[in-house]
Image 1: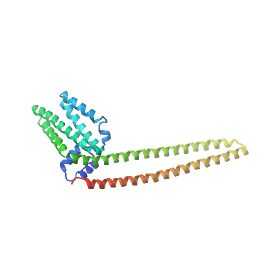
Image 2 (image 1 turned 45 degrees about the horizontal axis):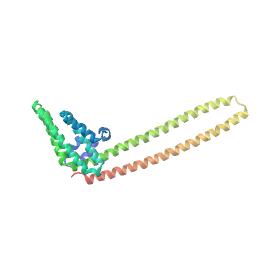
Image 3 (image 1 turned 120 degrees about the vertical axis):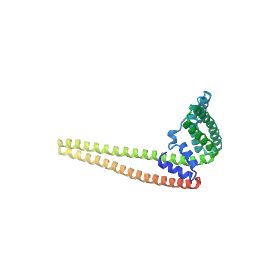
Image 4 (image 1 turned 180 degrees about the vertical axis):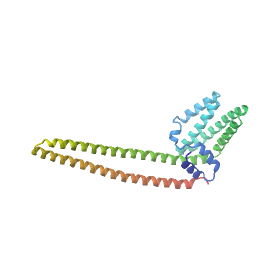
Length: 252
């Protein structure tokens, strides 16, 4: 987990080192990219099939991913918190049992380090079930912050790309203007006095139109910059509000 996200999680967990240790292994910095898009029920069904096939190593891996997804879904559906608590506790219990089977196999094969690691995982599942209320509370604050940060980055990227398109368009128009002026200068060289005067009048009309376009683009840029500042201010206020909420609800 990157340093900034570690700091955020530490802030939320306060002095609860054990809760921090669990969540630092459980939460994703980019849940949208990391968590499976499959329905939770389908993932559970696939995991249970691995158990029926007695492929406990595969079930061990699948249960971990299913539990992580269930925690994320619980944070995004606060109105169904009670249901998700039961689901997560049931998954944690089943995951612990599967882990125990894999641990027993590791012990028979003399893989002491592997067995010790699996014992730690069993304890984590038990702790998760015991502290599920705190887990969901902290995970909700953490994920809401991460999703907001990721959304801000995405919106900034869209605005940056829009500015680049506008700048490229202005450069293209300036290049075309320079080329048109050069062509018209060459054309006027072979003109009579009357034709040249008419051409100069047309040139002024074209330049006036281009000037109006430049002024319109300038106004659009100013409005975009004003809107950018308004958005940045709004995002700052939201960050401060979320920070206040974290301070008020963190584990002490």
